[in-house]
Image (cartoon, rainbow, N blue to C red; front, side):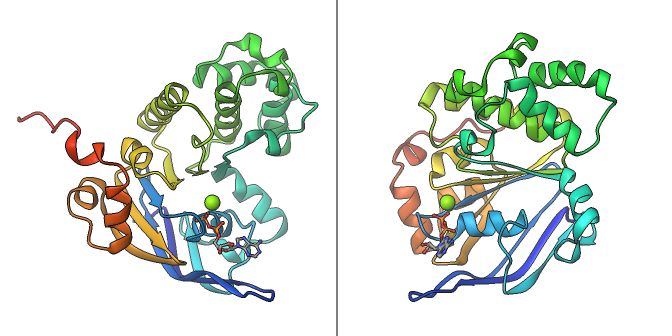
Length: 263
Ligand SMILES: Nc1ncnc2c1ncn2[C@@H]1O[C@H](COP(=O)(O)OP(=O)(O)O)[C@@H](O)[C@H]1O
Ligand SMILES: [Mg+2]
């Protein structure tokens, strides 16, 4: 059974230049699975991510999450359910209180969702920091005075704080340099193996998506134009957009990943 089922989502932004950012979009995600959502800039990826997060209201369509009508949730019920669906953005600085410490930022998530008693929050923060490869000492550092890679680890720790079933990552590693990016991708894969979290992993970069995804969905102009296991899509893209994305990363073809070992 699906963890997330997005069906026939449509969203047009009003204004002089009306843009149909989502045009009948349907995707599903199973527990513990990563769906890589890839497509050129402006294809509607962030709109889909934000609609799933209830940050953008779709015009029509439905979303089921953990067997409930996700778009019907309001008020207190929505605030409680939000613990199960977290998001990590490209630029975590924009989502943190700039005056917060690392520990304060993670502690806020615990407080807002009423997790643990007040006196044990510092211990919980330390455990979360260690789970993302930071030390408990980082808790005291100002959020503005750690590196971009460390800040993205803090954003992941904050997402993990509420024990989510799904984390939506929108261009979460796009601003990081190659080495730091590889470490964050490793961390995400390890966390998934340990805890069975599902990811909707949004990126314009097929090489990044390949590193973490089980399946991929390709978007173009508000529509899903192709879906399938990531290796199949890379080996034989069926859509023009898929072919263009594959062609943009030549090493995908010339340097395929290692095959599963024979039994
Ligand atoms: N708040 C908004 N108001 C009006 N148009 C928007 C808004 N956000 C995005 N768009 C438009 O919707 C389309 C999809 O944008 P977006 O979802 O950000 O795509 P992507 O994340 O794939 O780059 C683009 O044409 C973009 O200009
Ligand atoms: Mg985007």
